[in-house]
Amino acid sequence: MRSNRALGATLVGLARALGRALVSEDLARQCGLLQSLDPRVRVAGLLTLVLAVTLSHRVSVVLALFGTAVLIAWLSKVRLATLFIRVWLVVLAFTGVIALPALLLTPGDTIYTTAIGSLRITAQGATTAVLLIARVETAVTFTTLLVLCTPWMHVLKALGAFHLPQEVVMMLAMTHRYIFLLAETASQMFESRQSRTVGVLDSATQRRVTTRTAGVLLSKSVELSNDVFLAMQSRGFRGDVKILSEFRMRTWDYVGLMAFLAVGAFAVWMGRS
Amino acid sequence: MHIPDGYLSPSTCAVLYAGAGLGWYGALRRIRRTLTARMAPLISVFAAFSFILMMFNLPLPGGTTGHALGVTIAAIVIGPAGAIMSISIAIAIQALFFGDGGITTLGANCFNMAIVGSLVAYATYRVISSGAALTSRRRLVATAIAGYLATNVAAFVTAVEFGIQPLLFHDARGVPLYAPYTLGVAIPAMMIGHLAIAGVAEAVIAAGLVAYLQVADPSLLQANSGLVPGVAVADRPAPPKSLRKLWITVAMLLLLTPLGVLAAGKAWGEWSASEFSSAEGRARIAASSQNRPPPSVTPTGLHRLSRLWTSPIPDYAPPFVKSPSLGYMLSAMFGVGLVMSLSLAVQTYLQRRRGAGQAA
Image (tube, rainbow over all chains, first blue to last red; front, side, top):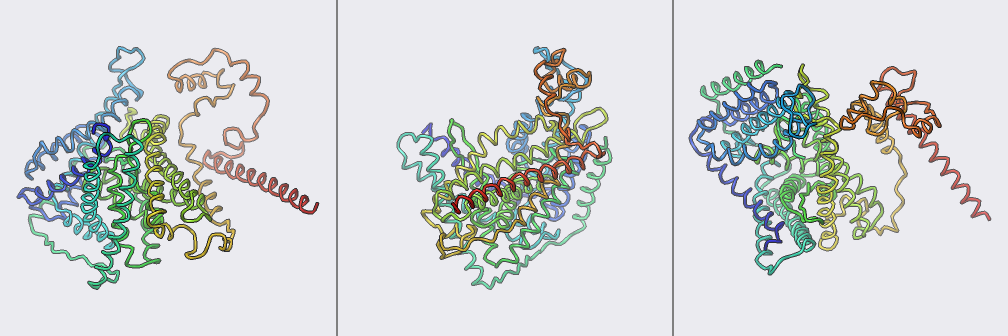
C-alpha cells in the first residue's frame, strides 16, 4: 500500500475537500458577528479589508489588520485553532518558502552576516519578507472568514447583487453543487480500485489507473450535463436566468458596512509608504 | 500557479482584471452567439470536472507526483470560449470557497491559467492535429504538446508578473512592496518546476484522457476537431489558406516586444568585449555572476572574434530612434520582414526546382 501513494493522496485530498465544506456549512449557521450581517455587507466589507491589506505598505498597519481579523473571527465564533491549522500554518509554509530567500537576496543594508561569509541578511530583505508573509496571512484570513461564515448560495446571491452577470452566478452555483457530486464519485472510484488492489502498483500502472479514472469521470460529467440540461428544459428553462434575492438591509447592516469601510479607509491612509 | 493575495500590487491586479475581463467578455459573447442553453450546464459540469482533476495526484517518472490544470482537455472538448469560462469558474470557486488563490489576484489567476492556458492549448492542438482523423495518434501527440506548452506559457506569464513587482513597486529604501524577486530569479524559479513536473502532468493526463475518449466516446472530440462530421479526412476540401490570423498573431507579438525593455541588465553571458574594460560594465558582469569579478583584461579570443561582425542595429536600438520601446518594435518588424523575405526566397527557389524537375 505504501507505494500506492498517489492514489491514496488523491483519496485523502478529495475527502478533505468534502470535510471542509461540511465545517463551513456548520459554522455559517452559528450566531456570531459576521453571521448577523447581511451577506452583501459581509462580501463587500471583507473584500474591502482584503483590498486595504493589499494597499497597505507598512508592516504595523498590516499587523493591526491581522489583529482585526482575529477579533472578527473570535466574535463570529470561528475557532482560532481552525484558522491556525487551515490558514496560518499553510500560508506560513507556502509563503515562508518564497519569502525567506528574500532575506538574503534583496540588496540593502546588512544587519546580520551568516556563517557562510557571502550570505548577508539585509534590513530591506527582512522588511520585505515580513511584509509579504503578514500581508498574505491577513488577506487569506479575511477570505476564509467570509467563506466560513457565509453559506455558498448567499455568497453567490450577494455577488449577483453586485451586477455579476446572472449566467455566471448560475454557473458558479451549479459548479459548486457538481463539485461535491463528482468528488464523491471520484472518491468512490478510487476507493473501489484501492480495495481491489493486492500488493503494490508500479508508477506506470498508478498513472494509468489515475488517467482512466479521470476518463470515466469525464464521460460521467458530460452525461450528467446532458441529464441536467434535459431536466432544466423540462422545467421550462430557455436560457434566461433569474436569481431571487430575499436579502433586506437593516440598520445593523448599515452600521456594519460603515464600520468595514471606515477600518479599510483608515488602514489605507495609515499604510501609505 | 495560484497567486495568493499580497503577491501582486493593486495596479497589476487591476490591469490583469481588465485583461481577464476582456477574455471573459469575448468568451461569454461567443457562447451566447453560438448556443444555446445547453452550454450552461456543460460549462458548469466541466468546471467541476476540472476542479476535481486538479486534485488528482498523478505519479510521474522519477518518483514525484504532479497535478494537472485540466485546461487542455477543456479546450479540446468544449472549445476555447467554454474552457475560459469553465476554468475561470473553477479558479473562482477555489479562491472563494477553498482559499486557494487570492481575491485581488483572481483576475491574474484567470488571465494566466484560464485565458492564456486555454488559448495556447487550443491553438497548439488545432495546428498540430490539423486534418488528422479523430482516432489518430497525431491527436495524442498534439494534445500532449498542447498541455505541456499551455502550462509552461501560463507559468512564464505568471513569472513575469512576479518578476516585474520589485522593479515597479518598492519604497524609498528599495524594499520591494510585493513579490520580492526580479525577473532573473522569478522566471527560473517558476519555470524549473513547471518544465519538469507540472507541464508533464498536464501533458500526460490530457493525452491519457484523449486516448480514452478516442476509444470510449470519439464524438466528444468532434466539435473542436476542425473536421466536418461524416466526411472522411481524405474527402474534405482543402481549407482556405487565409493568413489573416497569422498576421494578427505576428502583429500582437510585435506589439509585445517592448516587454524586453523591462528586463534589467543583460542576459548572463551576453556581454560585449567593451564591457570588460569599462568600470560600469565590469560591475554589471560581477553583479550577475554572484559577485565574482571578471578577468582584468578582455579575453583574447572574445576580443578577436567580436570584431568579425558589426551589427547594423546593436542591442535592438536603431541609432536614429530615441525611445527603447519603439526601437524594440522597429527591430522586431525588421527581423520579421527579414525572416519572411528569406522564407519566400527559399519557397520560390524550391518551387522552381520542383517545376524544372517535373518538366524534365
